[in-house]
Length: 348
Image (cartoon, rainbow, N blue to C red; front, top):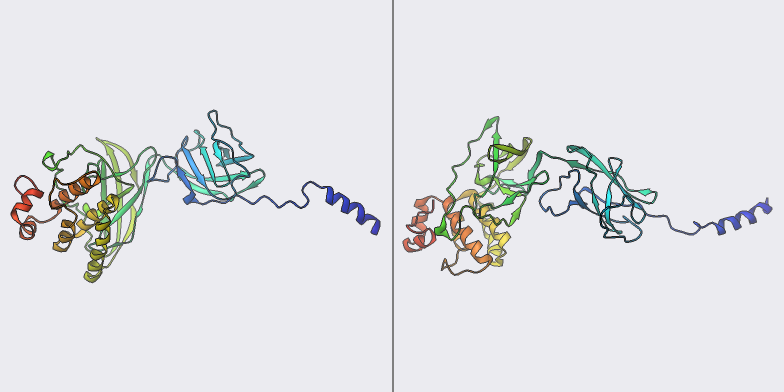
C-alpha cells in the first residue's frame, strides 16, 4: 500500500489549486442596491443604472467602462432573473450595472452576483412602473407627526416641500380610511405670495421621499389606518400606491412635552433639513405649545437672513397659517404679527 502514497502526494503538491483558499461567496442585501441618482426610492426598472454594494463582489477592480458595456468584467457577472446585466464598474465592495431593458416592468425579480463560478444567494428586488410603496418613516402617535416614506416608481421622485412651504405636496394626493370610513382631509391654506419674499411657483425641495401626512389629515384616535397615494399631472394619474395599513399609537401630553423640549437642540443646530422637519412636525397639533417652539425659529428681523437661513425664516413664517388667528393675536404682539404676516397680520 505504501507504494501508492508517494505518487499521490506528488500529484497533490503539483496541483495548482493546492494550498489556495477558496474564493468567498459575494454577499449583499436589499438595502445595498441603490438606483443611481435616486435618493428617495429603491424601486427598480428595466434599463436603470444601479449601484450594488456588498462584500467579496470581485477579486479585482475593473472600470469604469464606457459603452458598449460588457456582460462579464473582472470575471464577474450579475444575473437579474437569470439575465446578465451590463457592467460599468466592479470591485470587491461595489458594482455599477445597467438592468436589462427587456425585463418585466412590474414584479419581484432575483439579483445574483457571481465571481467566477462562486455566486451569491439571490436577493429579490421589486420592479415597478406604476405602483408606489408606502411605509411609516418613523413611529406614529396620536396628535403627533405622521411622516410617510414613499418609494416612487422610476423615473419619479417625491420632493418636499414643493413649493417652498409646509403644505407643498405638488401633484400628490392622499386618501385615509379608519374603522371602515373615509376621513375628510383638513382644509388647506393658500400658498404664500410675493409678500413673503417667495412665490407659489418656487420649488426648492430639501427633503426627498418623505411627506408629512399629518398636514392633510387629523389623527385623533389610536388604531390602524389605511392610506393610499395618487400622483397626478393635471388629470393624468402618473402612479398610485396600494392601500397600505399604518399604526397610530397612543401618546400622552407628558410625552409630547418631552418631544417638544427635544426639538430645542434641532432648532439651535440650525440644520436646514432638520429644521424643516421640525417645523412640519410641529403642525401636527397647532396649539400654543407648538407655536412657542415655532416662534423660536423666526429671526427678530424678518429680513435679516442669508442663505438657508432665509429658507428657514420663510418656511417658519408661512407655517403660521396652521394656527388659529385668535391664538396668534393673543400670543404675538400686533406689530410683530404684521411683520410676520404682511401686510395686515393675517397668516391665512
